[in-house]
Length: 276
Length: 276
Image (cartoon, rainbow over all chains, first blue to last red; front, side, top):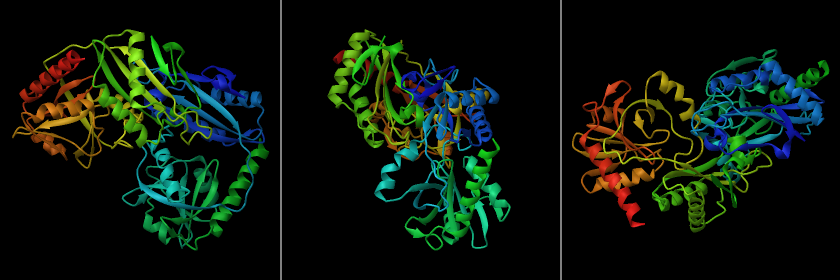
């Protein structure tokens, strides 16, 4: 397996950063993550746009243009020859002499095998909530201090994931976006304090052909009154949320809208791959 | 220069972590930092206690006991022979196979030369405020996403540092604790949402011999009504804060209590070194 590090492809096991890097010293960096399906980099344009936006927002100067990054990704894909896999691009604060000021970033691009099924039945999840907002929600930073720290609490409460909220207005999961389907068949998703996920964007596009779609405030009360709830992410696609803090949402099982949207998303992905 | 990495002393330039480390992948880790003066590790017991507490709080299992860590620090000090320096201990989430679950941590101990003067006149700082609370304020995590991200804003506003607050109740700076001296000569410092700094602890001890000392809520209004304000940290000791969001605090210059406490802190440090 090969990794792209700064300006070259190297063997993955030899890919290291000096301890002075600002990710190690101060947890400072941004990243993006996407799937490769049948040798096609899924929605790579969206991911590259967001990677570049995150870098700019966090005052990190990415050493490559979008086109150059795209070429590097394709080169890595060719070299590793992993038709179904994941790619993770990380841009750190670099080797900072004072361990505080970002300097020339280090760029890492890793690839790992990732098998994926075209499931049409959404998984059913039980979630808890936690008052929290990510430090810089607009950017996909590497800071997962809270999400990782909460893992033992999830295990303890037998919950699958944790939904962040501020004063009862929810935002996102550590690694996924959140949606509800109201009793009037309106699809709602939080707009503030969230990372604008690529799968979120695709779901909004799919849904808007058939439903009224609203990006705006969603409260815990809205969730308890909703017909269905689900999350979205690149690796989870769509998963139904059927329980929140021990209370059932809707009928307590994956609903028809969630199932239908999952089917649309899988079809979209299949047609994206065919067109390439 | 040598660095201690996991279980050995190695040359600093060769000290690297594999890119799968959870600090690089997810900014997950804890650290501590202290000064070495005339070959004495300043308040090392306090720093080791806090390092171990931070690790426990963040579910990271430190591979060494307090005594073992102390021996390693002394070995490193002997090897590098830097009588006046700084030491930084970092414990990361380790080489996580799924890039999310902490595993066996990586331990880094770095040392750098650090000249230090026994100044008796506090520096005078101008600060701004920002609504924010650190993710896990009880632990000294490596997450400085917000503090680093705000650096350009500090430069733009010609401010020296930024004081975090929630709804006007202040907590801490990204790397320092905060104190005020009220018009009645009461020394107050926030207790909630702060890292309990070692210098903070020493200053509280020094101050309590001569003043009433209160650990509790401090608001921005309290600061504007205060006689003096100052910050504390291992590398800054005590620095006066004479301006907040463009408004003068007290007479707008370092006050007598701040100056006196700085002198006490320097004396305490000198006597700590002499006793070793």
